[in-house]
Image (cartoon, rainbow, N blue to C red):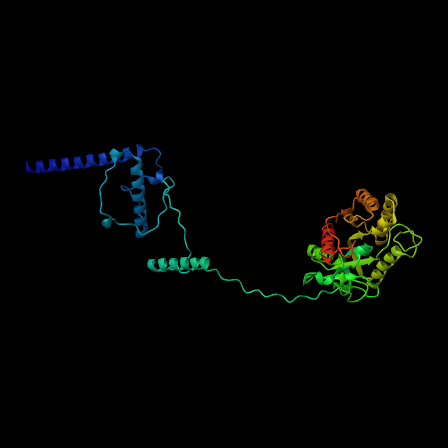
Length: 403
C-alpha cells in the first residue's frame, strides 16, 4: 500500500511538471502573437539559447536578447508586463558594445558645441580646465587684438620720363590766357608733390619736369604760370600715370586770317598754326620710341578776334578747320575743350557775343567737344582781361574734369 502511494505521488508530480511545461509554452506563444509587427530579431530567447563554444559570445548574445526583450515588452500590452523596481546601484551594466535593432526608437542626442583638445586622454577636470583656458585665450584676442605691424613710408620713386611705351599727353593752345600770366608764388606750397608731371614748352628745352614759375614761361625763372599746373595735377590724380603737358601759345593773336599780323589761321603759311604743328613734330622726333596718348586739347582764345570785330561765321569756320587739321596730323579724334570767352568786362561786349556764338555753335556741332563756361571766374583787376593765379587754377580744374 505504501508503495502504491509513492507511485501515485510521482505520477502527480510528473503530471504537474507536464502542465507547467505546456503552460509555459503557451504563454511564450501568446507573447509573440500579441505584437505581429515585432521582427523576428527581437523575439526573446530566454528559453532557448544556442550553445556556442565561446563563453564571451554567449554573454554577448544573452545581453542582446535581454535588451530586445525589454523593447518587445514595451510594445506589448501592459497587462502582460511584470515590472520590478531595482536599485540603480545594483544594476549590472554590460561592458560590451551592442548594435540596437532597426526597429528600436532612435534616441535624440542634444546638440553640443565641442571644443577640440590636443589630448583626448585627459581626466575630466583637466579637460574642463583646458576648455576654460581656450575661452580665456579667445576672449583676450577679441578684447586685445594683436596690433598690426608698424607701417613705414616707402621711399618715393623718382619720376622719370619714359623713353619708350606710352605717355598720356594734354595739349594747350591759344593766346595769352593759354600762357603764363598768373603769379607762381600764389600756388599752394607742395601743390604738385607726389605727382609725376612733365612739360614740353620750348622745343630747345625738350621734356622737363613741370616746375611752376621755373619753366612754365618763355624765360627761365620768370615766376609765372597758367592753367597747365592744375590740369596736370588733376589728370595725374585721375589716371595715376605720368602726365605730359604740351603747350604752345602767343599773346595778342587772332584766329582769323590777318594779312597785317601773325595769326592762328590754317591758311596762314609759316605762322602760328604751322609753328604749333612743327613743335609737336619736334616732340615726336626727339622721342621716336615714345607714343603720345592724347587725352585732349584746350583752346583758350578769342579776345583778339572780338576786339578786331571778327564775325561769328568766320570764327566758326576757322575754329572748325583748326581742330580738324590738328586731329588729322596727330592721328586721333581726341576731345577738345573750348574755353568760352568771358564777358564780365563790358568792353567790346557786343563783339564778344559774336565769338561766343561761334564757340557754342562749334561745340554743338562736334560730338567730341566741350564748352567751358568761365563767366564766374573773376579777372585780375590790375590786368584785365587776365586772371589771378587762383583763377587760372580754377579754369584748369574745369578743363581737366572733361578729360
